[in-house]
Length: 554
Image 1 (cartoon, rainbow, N blue to C red):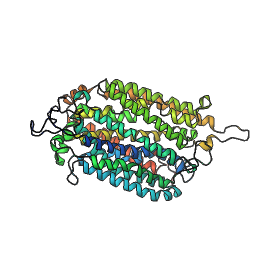
Image 2: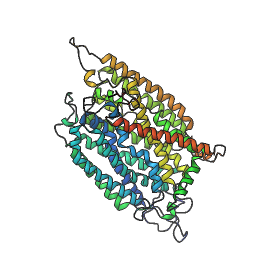
Image 3: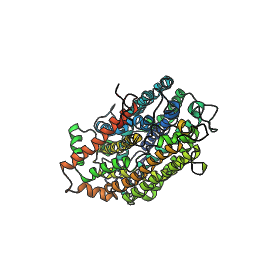
Image 4: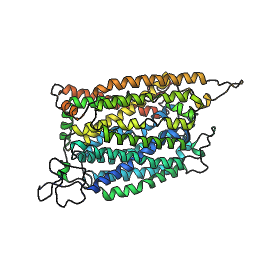
């Protein structure tokens, strides 16, 4: 390979090449070094831990935790539709702050380490918070304090985002050493590792949270088990599951040599100046609009999602199998993208995958009307919702590939995390908009108990009306998604050349473009942040902007 010489370079990663000569032998180039394979595997261990811990909240915070453990949803003193809609956003809120993490981690070392120290510290502190949660969880469940439980997960996330941001920065640094034809291989492999290990947390959910305590007492489901772990013990088991990867991460991970990392520290003025400079470009503005728009509008979640889920009432086993099925398909999608679409037209890929994902809401309509008598079966709901994950996997890393092309050397974490912040703010904004439309379609009044209630003649009292409300919300969401995909596609680059051309387009280079980035990005971020907290606390969730029907004066 052109990046390596025929001499002794121990533990190098053959797939990584450096056109600047960093892979040359020490006796041929003074400042050259190979990329340590152990470091890359340590990085993959870090992504594996993210897959397990993030996967736990992503897979189970809504069901069974919000709807069943802290439920039943809609009952007095228990969780509400708004809380279950917004819970994934609140527990993962620090993902929206990654740009600020990047500003710190790109310029400040920890214990003399550029990246490794932050990664180890972040995961150590986060796992300690999870241990604390294991002792508090029983009391929180008894008092129905789902808001506090969600905030504890947010604190754990505050710490592990330190690790994730540092790891992302190292990944971008390594990716810049790859040859153009394979650039993005390490990044996509890290993503695949992260999503592959969610399988482990699915196993935890299947065997530890599928007992009577994790399913509504008023319903019957033959897929529940006679055994389970207590809610507190589940958190201990989660930490134990992570430990082998944690040990591997600590033993294998090393900082890149300074000559490969390019820069050691930056003053805050350097960081602000560099980021402001790139903000004033066409490519940065378009990627911000793409990141926010694709997630908030092109992927808008169905306002009736949690109500439909409560009616289908899948058990944790059914939900876990559906998640496992979806994760396998997602990985397949990422693998297909890596093999066939990394050099394809990114914009076209975004459009056709986005439209197909939007049409996946047809499965919700099938559940609403119990099509073929199986639509409201837990297995149908759990598996149908995962079928299109292979399409989602194809589109997962599109914006990340663009960041590789535009991030200045030494500022990789900051630029990458700015775009990740916009992406995650778009996801949170998605859930905020989802909640805003809950009262529009009068979904707060829909509950599984009322849905299945009969009158004296054996007729369903509310089913026809409730079905109409849920179907209207679902069809509305499909229309918004399809229209949003076509609108947002204009801001997606077609390939690497578009990224470079847009970056160098002097006709767009202006302080007004930079101001637009701050207004659009900052406005979307602040709105999503404030509205999410309004939706999780009982005292403010009555506000219409938080998905409530309006607060009555006392």
